Image: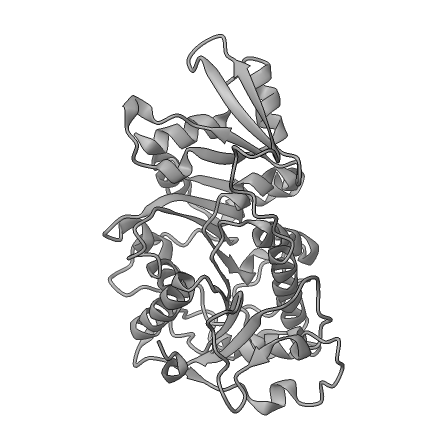
Length: 386
């Protein structure tokens, strides 16, 4: 499929004057005079020019090129880059059409095993990112990083405050799990959190994430797509957001999450939304933070270890006898990365969710099982299968 009809080229001013042969720019192909071919690439960068989905962050449509100005000047990282920048996705006649264009482009890329990295625009484009999986005949897990929980019920139009609500109600339903990271309790209604709990979805508040950041790795490793709202980062590190909060993730913590996400072999698309250059500082600090997050995601991507075959010699298998049901819990540990996984048997003999039979976990889950307790992660995963 020719994707050129969906995109406009990158303004020359974005990359003008970058001559360093070790720069990120010199290691990728960009849409300048001609759009690069996406087939054969590992990663495709997509800029979003639409901000009509937010009333409080107008200006996010300008984010993509500002992020590129910072990203292109960073040094190339690890691995043999096969990265294309397809340019900026042309706006539709309205927000809904812009989201559908993103859906179509992402679907084509994912089907061709190219990972879309979406930059700019407002958080409602998560809906278009999610719709890209609709015809792929599989369940997906969504990781959402945001200070807010965008599950308001305010009409038919998908916007930056209700897009998660629209995803939850979307038919056909192919959402297996939703994990929300870094929400701030004083910004979230308790009834909204109760909705997630009822659906066996999980939300991790900022304080918990900060205290147990390494324990978030298995949660991030289980996601098929990640949506990162820059609002999750505190305003002193990322002032360029109309909804910026005084508290939040540090830039370093945001980069750590992106590193984990990049390492995740399941993850097939990622979006970085809500950066607004109009309210950034004079040095465009938020653009620098966003660019560094993307750099760490790509760095993680090129450090992937292709850990899929749990029956191979690269894994240690541990069987833990339990005092009550289940009779046994089975764990796997990778010799390459020292990451852990856990088997969750199908309830009542139903083979409906085969790809979720083995789920990521942590060493602490194994320790808990060894002490005779069933890990909460196991209980939640089986509850989703019923």
